[in-house]
Amino acid sequence: MRTFAVPALLWGLATVWAGLFGAIQPATAQLLWDWDGERKTDGSGRRVVSFDEKYTPGQIIVSFTDRNLYFIHERGKAISYPVATPREEDRWQGVTTVTEKRENPAWRPTPSMLKENPRLPSWVPGGHPMNPLGVRALYLGSSFYRIHGTDAPWTIGTAASKGCIRMYNKDVLDLYPRVPRGTRVTVTWERFRSEEISQSPVATRRGSRSLGGPRLRNMQSNELPRQAIESWAN
Image 1 (cartoon, rainbow, N blue to C red):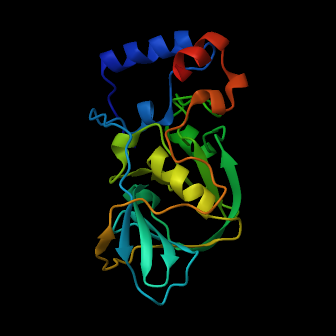
Image 2 (cartoon, rainbow, N blue to C red; image 1 turned 90 degrees about the horizontal axis):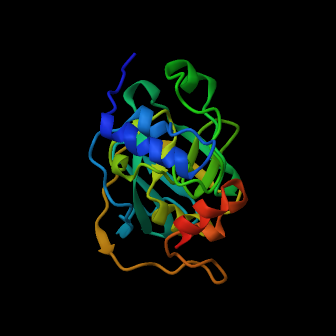
């Protein structure tokens, strides 16, 4: 089993987080799972690209080889988002559907995660800045797999997860309102040939929320101490 060394400075920062956020332990899946020492700012890699016309609008194609998620926006066009893919030992593929959607979901490690890393916390509340699911999650079939945001944006573009599909928080905020329950999701190792059409944002459907960065005052803030909420929100 692979283990990952965590720098002493990182543990110090985690201890500070624990003081700010009460009983929540400073042991996110990323800090103990795949920290690579190269923290990156949470951003967006969203692009509009050409895509195979055989795919109908409204479905999702995830290419683990491309390390991109494609939402078919219209016939022959897709919105492309960079993702973090599963590690080699956690590869999978298939066709499924979105069975559940959750905003600011709470996170619990699976039994296999705990077996591999007993130091993981048993639960992290929704809205916590160190929640491995980030600000939105799309649940895939009856599996443990999800398309979700992340508290570890430096892993986007790498093979880092236990099977889930990670996105930048800004990108999952953009995708979330486009995808109803029942959406078809194809997960494949096929490589797709696509060319960029535009880097300009594509408007979400009418009535969707702002695509701006999340504010903790709009999250499940009742899980955290008031002083921590005010500090994060401001």
